[in-house]
Length: 469
Image (cartoon, rainbow, N blue to C red):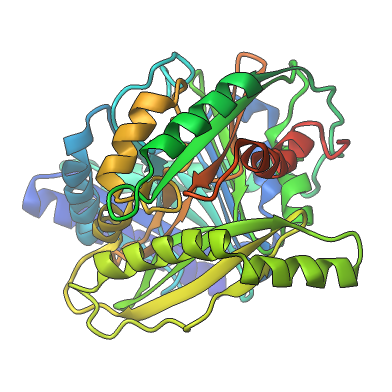
């Protein structure tokens, strides 16, 4: 009886979509979601035949939430800065016009993607094949929550198609994905990582930091975030699935992600920093800046945590981030809520100062509007942003690409969640470009900044090796 109901719902949904496509003389997105008895979605992406297929993964272990995307029904991409508004409009129209059949209002199609930190083309060719802005609606999307797991299969329905043909093809697609989903993950592959190369090298980095410090003046330029890149040869045996296993096991408080785009590269990482979350008109964001190492035991860890809270330099850096976020959100959120003092976010190898920020949205902005309003925060650019971006353009000799840019997802209601792509790497042509950065303020010193970025690079270098390092 349940199967019969499912079949009827599917047929009814396809018929409604086709009717809509004919009435409006335009393509309509149709999505069908059903429960699926799999608790871990990562194995969905391990089939050898999918190496040349778009694959996307997102997991927040501490929240019991993950999704995995395979293939694409729609792609939105651009190489120009001004096209975010156009992409936003296309996504909005697609989702509002679409038809979704599901037994859970929280489950349905998602559009997933992100964009580069700086919309202008970089100074090297590291990211030359990777789109500056890219969003995809997967053909098959697995979504796992504390309530269970669902598969969402999506298709574009064109005017004048035949309903029976669509139903037949759609059922074939469902069977295709159901039949090929493996149940277990392959063992984590241990990979030798070698030929380390720093870009810039340490001497150039030191010189850059001193040059930035000369530009910092109270009331004019207070902070600039300078990043660096670490190049690692990973060979043919690198597996992003293994890297995800290492990261989600070690950093359950962070968001692990990867975007594997055939012939363009695989961008992956594990970020602690939420940019913005929007759900039913309520927003949540945070200031995350100020870093210190973890201790070797509980007492040392506590002392380091207190040192972080009492550090004038780290508190100053943190406050600059918090003040900028509040300033950008005040016009649309009259009653912003945030605690007076930061708390400490403890990760496996570092501790950060963190201040949660929330409030009710006063207008009808959707998630991408909010992303555009907030990015880049002073946590990844500096204060004031315009001047800091100018200095980054002059001083950084490498292209950040998607590192420190916004990544996330949008659902059918215009809600969604975006994170800042920190602790991340681009893997292509058997080489990984690992990125990390630090906020330079008046009290900064090249030696401590280098050591801080070394700590931030470590999780990804370890993941590249399969957890050996």
